[in-house]
Length: 281
Image (cartoon, rainbow, N blue to C red; front, side, top):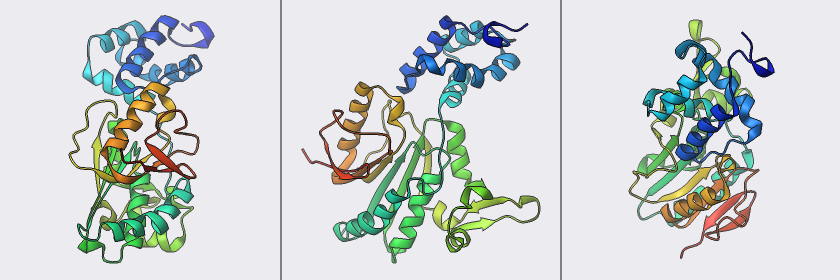
């Protein structure tokens, strides 16, 4: 039986409100009314297989604290659009300005810490790793680590594996493609795998940005791109304040091209092109 708007199952305003209240409380993501069809589309297969077509039963499971369904809902709602060297100007600036600056400033400690917050399937942290490998000639003499975190456990697992369809790197220069990726043959034809020299720089962890952070030390650089567009201004302000607190003095923050810190925080100074530096208190 087909419901309203041609839907297979009943999905009322009440169902939508129950689910988006949970999503906002857990992740800070605010789902507008325009997202109702998207939510239905991403959940309907699960509702059919696990809940006999009943959104009531699914909502009850969410409200009852079913951890498996909590994780499924969060993973289903989280959008993971990414690419290697997405917003290329950020990586050009990282390679030619930020990394040389850190090599001078951190010469005594020989330590660099970078956080890719909202790393999705790993293209961003691996792009950062390539920049480091190409810009730090004596990298093996340095203590360099990239932390890559995301709310979605599935994409974290994907990133950790480091295997992608070959078309994902088709836009990269051929020399870069050959140097930093292993190209599959036989049954693995059409796949590429990130080389171990990049993987050893990156640690993947699942993390909800709105919850407590287990990291102890400070970061020199934070990438948080195309993440806060899903948050309301109050949540954005709180998150950027926490970023400012965990960055070293004058540390760097990269955000997405459609995002802005204007009237959100005064803890950073703009360097242009959605690149910022932390202002020490």
